Image (cartoon, rainbow, N blue to C red; front, side):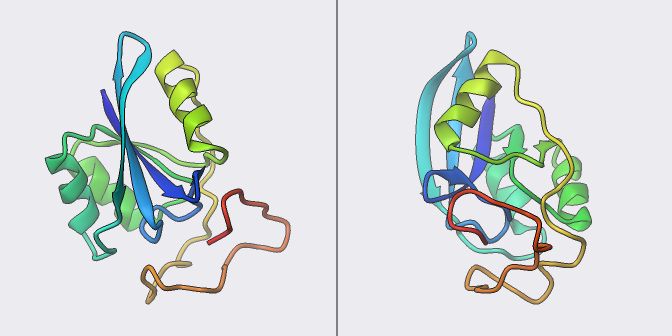
Length: 135
């Protein structure tokens, strides 16, 4: 299996589309066999699911993702795991062990509309805490 983890400073990014990079991990025989960090090529509607599918990704892991993105990844046959936070290496290890569990998306609906990689303000509620430098 090949998974893409939205990455910001070594941590899972709260926003998949605006993350600075993706950590691509290959999982074989219950272990991470390869890890590669690639720059986010840009957040354009429908682009990232196709881009990651062409790289062989079958699973995307992020803190949060909007409904339209979920639909587009599903159309590409890519499994989505959201509600994830923490260090990327620990998340990759949990995934390879088969124990990674997602949850509710960390982003509220509509939080990413009209923004790209350069968004500087966070749309989370005051009670939300995120690893890896916030948004």
